[in-house]
Length: 153
View 1 (cartoon, rainbow, N blue to C red):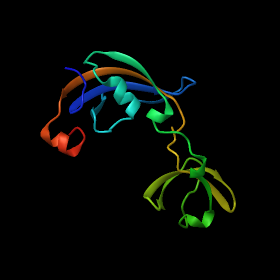
View 2: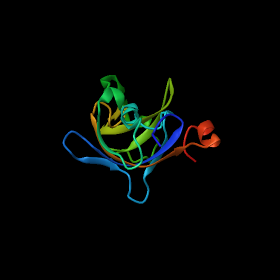
View 3: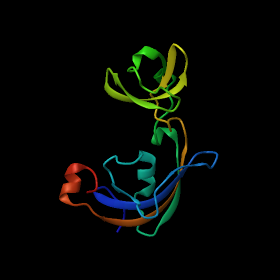
View 4: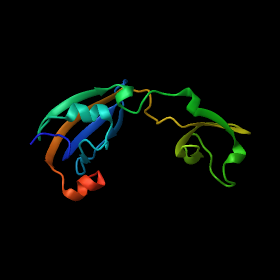
């Protein structure tokens, strides 16, 4: 059975950056299952998987525009340290939910000064080409509930 919209695909994957460093991978015991066509994975990988079958392997190089988007420098800002609740451990790499005009936004602390904290609202992989090594483990029809919920059950 081929991967196509409305089917659940189960994959083993390894994600690397341009330097070949592994950024993420599925565990051998717990592959990733997703509903194809529901936007559960980055568009470039979903496109590369369309038409594949159980047992197929592939390498997919996904440019930023088909991954987590380009990096936007305007999403890097300095905020007063007092913007964080008292007693909060504000350290480089810490992530916080900020309230933005468009709703909640996940930000990452990139620099901590005595008075100012630099935060970055870009996705950590924004602006990067994503290199996926994938093995398709299974493809099946989605249940009615999975189609309604937009994700595998």
